[in-house]
Length: 309
Image (cartoon, rainbow, N blue to C red; front, side):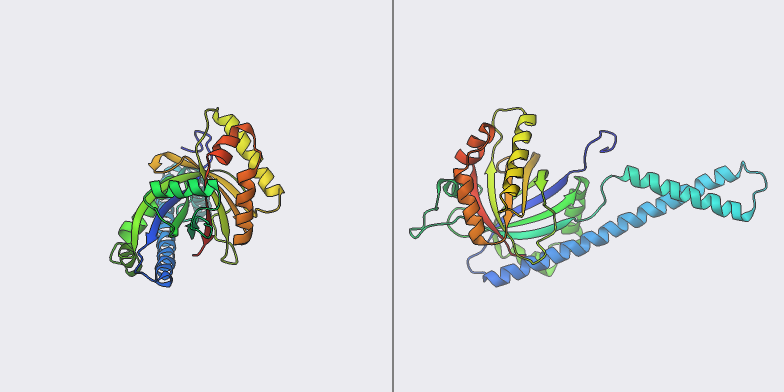
């Protein structure tokens, strides 16, 4: 489908927001989530291997069928000719099957982060964008100053969302220790799926050193054409990377009808919390393209994220 319609295979983030129950120790909750990510990655790899083996077996059967049909028309072929024909046909069928199969099955990566609203000594958000961020999270069911967990699982193409669902529901199941434990440890649950719309130096793997901080801005598209909007976002990503503060930057767009929350997210990765706070403040005061000034600076809803698993 992607090739026929000349569409790029999207990188999709399946995102879940959840919150630790007050009685659950933070380290216990983090251990549960680390184990969940390990289980999902292992079972997704096993499922992908099963898909690859099935495709290879199908290709072999088809190659054998074609070989028999072709050799029927050959005049007294020598044995080595038969072997060469079989080899060439099998390679051709495998190439054709791979080209038509679409995105590679499996999990591209995952990460967990804690979303927080920076607050002053009196408990109020430090700036208006953070206040809007607090209101946004409250509207999704996460009111109050407690941190919100954000679990993100990355896959190539929408078909892998089905694979991810199969892994969690059927291969892991609620009886698995980490999954069942998590069901009793969290409160609140909101999910959504987003396509990676544009990015600079971003990848689905967690930072190599296991750390990472993000500035997250949720926002809506203004009343402009998509081409103009995407062009303005591309310029913004270039500018953010040129500043040298961001080590990666990305814009995500919610898949049509899949999930709650604003349609767009701007996410900028930095090295530490201090740089994240500094970048957030500069974004709140930045002069952007008029297309983005209202959407991001005046109406954007902001939070800080810290990668924890």
